[in-house]
Image 1 (tube, one colour):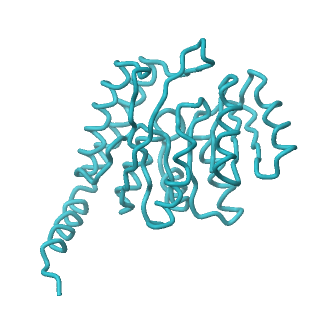
Image 2 (spheres, one colour):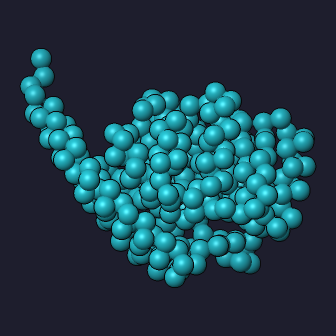
Length: 252
């Protein structure tokens, strides 16, 4: 599994320990961090053969960090990867269930469907509904319950191909575009619940979300995806009709 990490603060150590308690191997991709966490993570890896730390010299964004980890995973012979954030928001206890779902449906992407508690900022929860609507429109409602949750299992090879073919998918736009483009490729979505927790600064929480910058990025991304959707619309419609007809065939 992969954990992209950029200046995450002390929560990253709890996140990595919790992930390692559930799975091996765990790779952390340090994306040009300058907060001192890289050295401590490297020390953890020296004492733990199930933990590996990859270092990127400059910050390139979540998607860029994930891509580097995926490419290395392909070279090592891995076929699937669970991606989770480094800030402690994602539930490490759900890792086995997500991995089991992926093993049962290896051709699918296993998408986290957030269960928010009172710690979730209302503006973030409401704002993601817009992105969710667009992602479902762009895939003709192919079953993406949440477009922004970063707790997911991906089939690696098709995702790497899509990332190399896209001019985006390197920063905050990664999660949405990955789900949409894999859906276009015919990779079905399986949605599993995932409790999400937002930590305050006093609790060690660190957020790099910038409301204006990242919403402009998402808007431009959905504009690109909409154009791609128009090009693919005949194929998506044909696929949807074929699926509908298959469901109406009588069982023998």
